[in-house]
Length: 457
Ligand SMILES: [Zn+2]
Image (cartoon, rainbow, N blue to C red; front, top):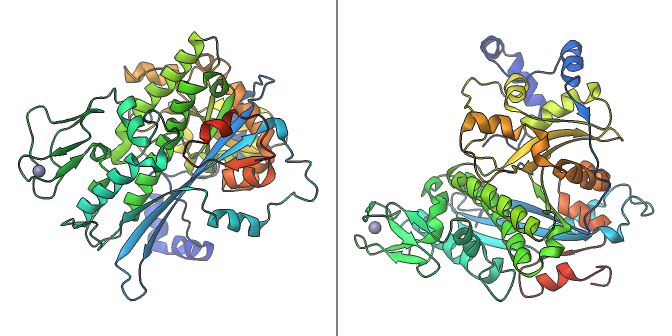
């Protein structure tokens, strides 16, 4: 994982760094440091005035996901259950009441807590360490089964007709042709000729060797991180990461099918970079093609693509941006090309020809608003694939390839600036301060998205 939300306490941190062994060790390391004045001024010179499109989408959807991995009983702390919540909030920009709302400069923490508790989220329950689900022989087998059941049932279905579930999206972005080379069941590993082929007609196989089930969702390989007795929270985080991106893509797929015009007039705000990490990273290149396909299809109808933006609240890029902020002019931005990233952000020499080759499907930008707030924003790469790494590294950093997408994304950030900046949980902050509704999958989603005005819902 490229960054962690968990931070050590300040006290503990300085004590360790003062330790002479650690100080000597650090002398031999390369890592990100605060820029000197000279460096700050010099880096800031490479930033340009930020564009505007003077336009706003009609509606925005913000997503957020949170993982919980907890012991089921205080007496057995190593017996854990995983619980993941993905919240989607629909905001009507025509009914904006954010900044002018009286006395609401700060979000009420009690209301935020109440929204966290409410049931308006898509939730997944997965076995953690030491729990075997439905007679599975290992935690991993039960984990695979739980993933399959929950990604293929109606909990992620955005329309009653057509397969607008995460499972359907997986089949769609993989062209209805998913191959798993070998049986993932414990101690089997059977490799049928040509692998196990999954299509919309064949969603589950019975392995001829071990006679156990192989599921389409095994393709995500999240189970490979599961151990019987260890802490499985990193597998939960991977699951959450990939599922959040797939749920947003599922909603967009449904809207493209039923309401392309509405889709074209919407923004989607995802928490974190436009990237999939770890074992499921192979989905990333498919999401890149998917968003390219969406923009091409809409263009054929004379429509603009939706605005997709990944907002990073923490991590190396945001830390760099904050350190640089004092040197940047207001309303300025920069594309984070690989040379820049290598020079100022990544303290490592293991560096590929194209940063994020396996993981990213969108390009990062740093953007400072007129009011002086700083954002790191990801926008989907405007290309169907990443063939030719060296060339791609150049193309993705050429801002003319994004047409007006950068300007449109910046306009959305300008509009929600205060809410996005002050609060860690984007949809909750937006939901609290704007006319909004929670989107829970089911037959009503399309009606809710296409209805004009949300205030009476
Ligand atoms: Zn098998």
